[in-house]
Length: 504
Image (cartoon, rainbow, N blue to C red):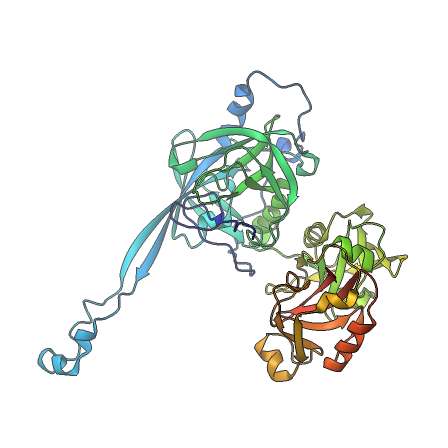
């Protein structure tokens, strides 16, 4: 059994992912925002960052850091929490109240306000006081104070927040502030030198050095809803959230956000930063309107395993497989179908489902997305006029697929799996639409080849791309299946995903 990976959100006491003291867990998919000031006037240097340095290593980066560090600030937050102590049953006893009156004991149970303090970091992006940080740093804060490197402490207000990417924009009243230069995170490469700047553990501004360890890192939605992280081994610790990740030129390529910890509050050499290109897209919208709108296809995409690559006869696993389409939405209207394999968007190849989703959400609603698609081995182009992503969207997500390997007898793939015909009553219990047709999985033997791919409550709606309406259909299609694996389309909690299950 694989070891469980623990994620820690960056407070001194919280136990989920992130890298700030204070703040909250990022699990909600809805956007919370407040409207704020005028559009930011980004400096010419910020708009024209030079990207990643290709010069030879220097003996010291002090001169570069002297220019960057004044624009990285500490963000101190206060959250007022109302405690609501339970009234003692002793005071509620009728025998006791007949002597002391009905209201006795209520004063003792009156809620009391308590204050919780948090600490994170931020990055000044305009001379008139706009500051980037993480949403979890300021989430639910009743009071926010920014401390500059020169010691000044200034009250800040929230301009807007975006939970889906964990980005927030603050505003302080000040002029002629130091600002950062924006780089191009798309040009960052694994092995590039980077520096993490922030206020870890509240000890004061600290700079740590490392390299870009990985790019386009997704964690299956366990950190943010939309994940496209730069991974780095530059030390990121609680308090660093919202701080800057800069390259050797001093250009900001990311906003430090999270750490991966295994039984420890501190750095384990695996930190995550939101790419600055994605941050700028969110920041510009928050400053302009206080909220974020995103392009929307109305489709669920998934990655392709080796077995799925064979099942769909694909030339490569690089791309995104369409596993679900919502009727009447842009993807459906444009003719995209379940089983289509998207290889490029707007002429640029995509690596996987997460890559495709990140590109779509950064396109404004109303934009036409040009998709290169493989359908049953034939290349075709589909143009989709994007809609606006709903705040509670379940479509537009991406899934990782399970089921890899090889085998000889396809009928063995589903041995140990028991099913029954789906009824409206069962559909309600397993949280799938009442109109869904298929068979629901009652049990899966732990020794079954399907044990890693299926679970109790899954609804099998297709076998080898043929619809399933009842147990008879299912059994017949399973017996007819040929090849090293069997292809299922499974509805899990209302969302479809393809799985290819090999025989042992």
